[in-house]
Amino acid sequence: MIVMKSKDRAFLRSEAQTLSPVVYVGKSGLTEAVIAALDQALTAHELVKVRFQASKDEVEGISRSLEGSTDSTLVAVTGFTAVFYRRSPDPDKRRYRI
Image (cartoon, rainbow, N blue to C red):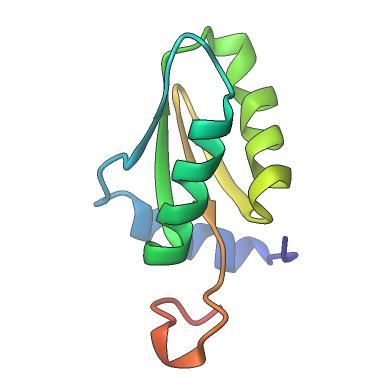
């Protein structure tokens, strides 16, 4: 997890607006399969949108758990959607310069 300035967070939020959700968290909540899917998506895309079917009260908690489990940064939570970012370890594959 990296510490971001609000300017960087706003930039990533704006970039995520055009993205479709790649990972879906069903009613069963946080599972190993969801963690693995988000980890793979972050490796491939760096910036990932996740859609939840849980109750609205649980979205923030599940998002924080996913953030810790995948070593990513939670950029934003809006309604039933969360945006995660994890910088690619390979500088040539980085899409976002933060």
